[in-house]
Length: 100
Image (cartoon, rainbow, N blue to C red):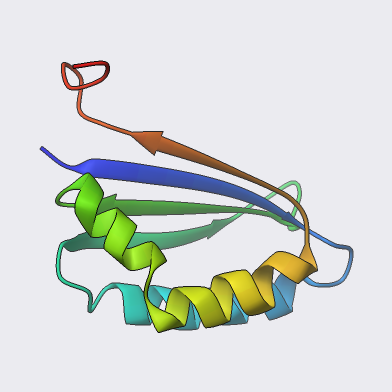
C-alpha cells in the first residue's frame, strides 16, 4: 500500500508557466527521495492556471521527510507559494488505514 498526496494549485494570473517550470524541478528532485513512488504534475485543459500534483510515497513518514527537504522548502514554500491564488492539499491513506 502507499500514501498519496493530491495538491491542487491555482496560480495568480500570468504565473502558470513560472510555477510549472519550478514544479518540473521539484518533481525531478522529489523522485530521487527514498520512499517516493511517483510525482506527477498536471495542468488544467480548460483552466491553464489550475495545476494538480499527484504524489505517491511508500509511507506517511516518507511524505513528512519530503516536506523537510531543502528543495521542498526552497522551491515550494519559498518560490511557488507566493505565486499561487489558492492551494489545497489532500492526504490519502489506503482504505482500511484511515482512522485506524
